[in-house]
Image 1: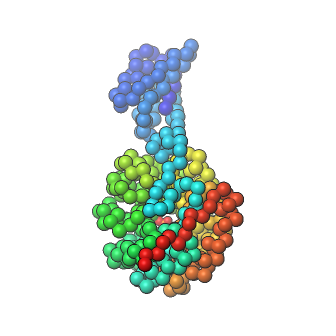
Image 2 (image 1 turned 60 degrees about the horizontal axis):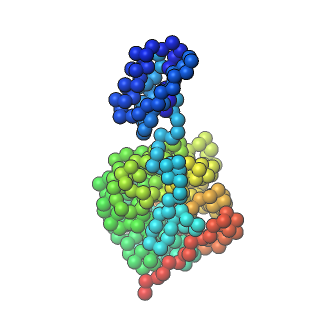
Length: 346
Ligand code: PEP
Ligand code: MN
């Protein structure tokens, strides 16, 4: 951040600004030109500092330099973060596919889906036990029972599981069942939850908020990183726009923007982005071409009877065809699909 003083500022006014900056334990770099005096602020600044300094006498302008987040930035951490989940590495050369139902509905529904997506080449099983819903009358999930079913599906298929945690008080319990904890779009700015998942030693996937800018998303990531959890994955799941033909608008360009500005891996979720099962394959391919490190895809044994998100869920057949279609785009993007069908426990 730099502070530009008005022409003719007195030494007293310049000292006033310098002392204010030092009062925040920040350093200064003074540059006194023929007309303007410019004071550089050294150290980790915060957004409110700009307004505070702007109010001081004879300050002409306060200009932020650099990003408001540090730990999430590529400047601070030039090399890609690779998140290890069992034998998988998310954010390396390989594309990771997470698949499963929107919500865990029953043991039979989850186990049959787990077997099918594993056989088709998926790497990680998804399924919500705690469901965030816009309406309180929607299915809210099976809770602890759902977590137990996920653990059973992992036991049977060997696939790691990802599931959502909605409240800070549930983090420990969900972490004891899940391999990756998901923070959903509606909770991207639940700062108490971000702090809590920042304290655990398990990977976290942070979905982009419904109407959040990339900067707000990276600042939310910063909360988790600042608590010490560096096993963090981002997920672009579409944002709210004026368009009504799709459930959300997949922000494809967010993928290369994240790659430029951050070192964190990014997964694309074309299911929630589009809301229609037949739009999932083309948007998934576009996401891979744009540099996504993986996909999250909703799959259901019978989408017509799904308790949640049936319209955007692929059938088993559709998912098999979908997985078989990823090769050429993945190769063109210089990646390969992570080995699917992780070992079946005998
Ligand atoms: C989900 O993954 O099922 C979900 C609720 O997604 P989002 O938070 O992106 O809406
Ligand atoms: Mn869903």
